Amino acid sequence: MFKILFSIVPYAFALTAMLLFVLPCRLKVRVQAIWAMVLLFCASKFLCFAQFGGDAFAPELPEKFIWFWNWAYSGMCILLVLCLPGLLIRNRRVRVWVVPLMAWALALWGVANGLKVPDVREETVFFPHLPVSLEGYRVLQLSDLHVSSAARRWRTQAIVEKANAAEADLICLTGDYVDGMPSHQTRNLEPLKELKAKDGVVAVTGNHEFYFDFDRYQAMYRSWGIPVLNGDCLSPRAGLAVGGVGDPVGLSYGVPLPTYETTFATATNGEFRLLLQHRPVINFEECGIQAAGTFDFQLAGHTHGGIAPGLRALVARYNLGLVRGFYRTSEGRLVYVSSGAGQWAGFPIRFFNDPEIVVFVLRKSPQR
Image 1 (cartoon, rainbow, N blue to C red):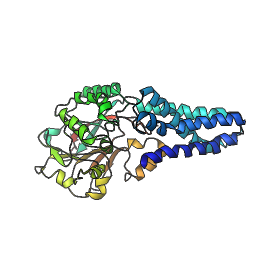
Image 2 (image 1 turned 60 degrees about the horizontal axis):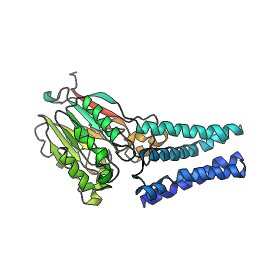
Image 3 (image 1 turned 135 degrees about the vertical axis):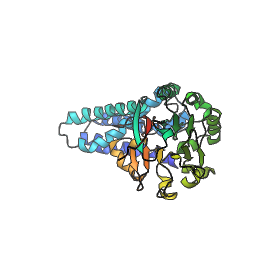
Image 4 (image 1 turned 90 degrees about the vertical axis):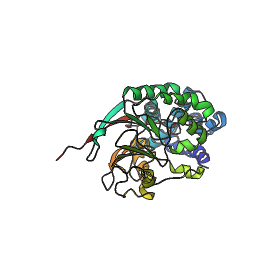
C-alpha cells in the first residue's frame, strides 16, 4: 500500500504544478502539452522504477539513469514549492523561464549533496563519570548509508577509507545500510567488511534492514565479523558496555524489541553505557528513558537530518523533536542523532544538511 501511494501521489504533484504554474503563465496550447508531458515523465519515477527496475524504491537500473530520474522528479517537487511565490512575479518571461530553471538547478544541488561522500568530523563529549580507561576513547558512528544501485561500491569504498583513516577505537553502525536484494547489492556493500577499529565494529538494525532478505544480510554481517546487537551488550574494553536495540519494524518480522534495562542487565560494575539504536523515538516512549542509569550516551540516526529546512519540522514531529545533533533527556543523558552518511534514493535531496561521519572523543568532565 505504501509503495502504491508513493507511485500515485507524484501525479497529484504534477497536476498541481500544471494548475499553479503552467496554466497561469498563459502559454500556447502546444507548449502546455509539452509541459504536461515533462511533468508526467517526472511524476512517473516510482512507477517506472517498479516496472523496469523491479522495485519502486530500490530499482536495479544503471546508476546514472536512476540519478537522472531522481533529479527530474526532485525538480518537479521544487517547482511545485515555487509555484505560489512565482505567481507574484509579474514579468511573464521570468515566470516561464527563471522559475523552472531555478527549480531544476536547486534539484541538481540537492541530489549532488545527497550523493557526495561525507567528510569525517570530530566532536568532543564530556561525561562526569567516565572511567579513566576511556579518557580520549574514539567512537566513530556510521548511519544510514543506503547502499544501492544508486550508491554503489565506489561510494561505500570511499566511506570505508575515510572511516579507517580516522583511527577510531570503536566503529558503531546504526542502521539502514542497504536498499536492494543481496543478489544485487552484496558487491556494493562488501567494503564494510574492511572497516577497522582497535576494538572492532558493532551494529544494530534499522527499518530498511527488514525490507530486503533480513536473515541473509544479518548472516553476512556476522560473517564479516560485525555483530548485530538486539538486546545484547558487549564490553570491548574495560569500563565500557555497548548495548544495541533493534528497530521496531522487526516486530512485524518476529524480531523482539528489548528494553534498555534488559539490554544493559549485565553491565553492573559501573561501566560507561553506550546505547546504539537506529531511530531516536520508539524507546523514549515505550521503554522508559526516564529510568535512572539506563545509559550514558545514545547514538541514533534514521532522520537524515531533516533532509531540508522546509521538511525539518515534519521530521521532528514524528521523532519527538529529535532531528539532528546533540540532545539531552530530562535526566541529562546525552543523545546524538546522525544526519547519516548516505541518502535514500526514494527522496534523494539534501539542502543545508550534509551527510556525515562523526568521531566522538570521550572526555571526563573537568572538576568544578
